[in-house]
Image (cartoon, rainbow over the protein chains, first blue to last red):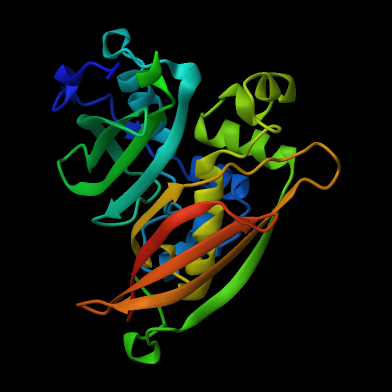
Length: 150
Length: 142
């Protein structure tokens, strides 16, 4: 395989805390075309028992994207970004993200493997609050097309 | 987590109300800004076609984010979605022709789990072709 398998198991240190903003949640919800009041209206979210507006289920990507991109673009890993496609994505929530949360992300390269002439890299992102409460674990599979054939 | 939807009110085979989501280039520009994913293939047709794509394509995460609305609209409280995963099986081309693309989304309860949770399997297609595979959510009901 073209990718460096020594990277399996490598963990990237916790990022600077990300402060979840009310307007960022609203902006993200508008971008996916979702007018659910829980994303936009503080009173509606509070009616559901949240302290502030709640984030859509895929919102975490808005702050995880930059850190996982930095992981997969590490030159020593050997990934050709022009051949990269998004293969899979998953979110497992301990609790929903709410405006006002201060979150940190720890990325881990879970796996690197070759399949059908492509390289596949799996990155897990553990998201928790700055006080250590687990919030969500996301897993992304990135596929680098045809790197084996080169 | 507050939902009025009761575990005892659903069964395997319960269908969620389907959704039809129109996608224009503007939606992709908004999604790029909101998510921070400015990959050129999602907004520049010249570049997208030069790397062999049929046109500008929607962010996979846009499609994933739009599709889960079939579940959150059904359950009311978005926080009831405790797990959500998909495989991106086919890109969604979004031409700049005044029409764009349309995403058709449906969902069905496929498994009853412990602790009042159910698994919902989603289907998402555009132009008659499936665009997400293994699209599943675990939902906490009352």
